[in-house]
Length: 276
Ligand SMILES: NC(=O)c1ccc[n+]([C@@H]2O[C@H](COP(=O)([O-])OP(=O)(O)OC[C@H]3O[C@@H](n4cnc5c(N)ncnc54)[C@H](O)[C@@H]3O)[C@@H](O)[C@H]2O)c1
Image (cartoon, rainbow, N blue to C red):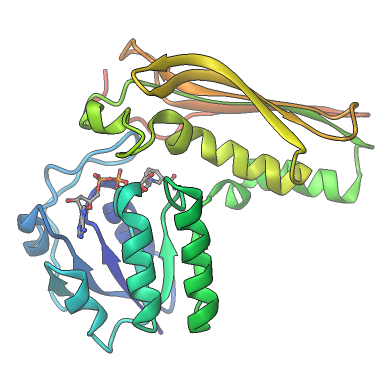
């Protein structure tokens, strides 16, 4: 039995908790939340995000609860620490958990600063522990399908494609923080990072990336990126960002071109509770 402690009981902390209930041989044994302390006694009613259910009253019987990560790290019952904190808090808390001898699953983006991401990987190596980042697309059937088709060549050579990920302004969050490069990094680090990760996985490391878009304050708000490869037949682009109208639902899509097939998918997560 793998015993998990979740840090940060916000939107993703809740989604992960619910997902673990459906996995055999995994048990959530501990929760840590420093700011919304009512969540440690099960009141998750104010939790919301860009998809999925509204939070509800939870029965946390048998789950240890902590206000400080250090106290959870001292709990020998916890094997894996699942970091569901805002991106600015990923590096310090991941490194603390790895140094305490725990394996770590950390939500994306790995960090807001490249040097912090490198330090997290170094800490995993130094402690001989696993570090996994929550890049989910390779695990979605729709994305796994095009990845496999490229690998086995069933439709001939893959010629690239276009990926999109667009959302309405996330008004349920603190927008100043969301669009701050020190807070969440805006839609580039929150949304675009998913497609950048998948493109890197499917097509390899590009030799350059060129992005053009409009800023909101210091953070890119809506933008197109071109991933440039040595093979000039390979044309790979991605669009991400936030649209101001609240009626715009969160959607993501791809159109991937092979010599003998074009594969198009438009996906929409189950709508946010109460969304217009
Ligand atoms: N993989 C995905 O598809 C996906 C989707 C949405 C969000 N995310 C990622 O999940 C992470 C969390 O996002 P969210 O939407 O759940 O944020 P959130 O603000 O809803 O939740 C974060 C929680 O962490 C708590 N917290 C902050 N600092 C803390 C600390 N030092 N110790 C303990 N608790 C602390 C906050 O009080 C809050 O409850 C982000 O990195 C985000 O990018 C991933």
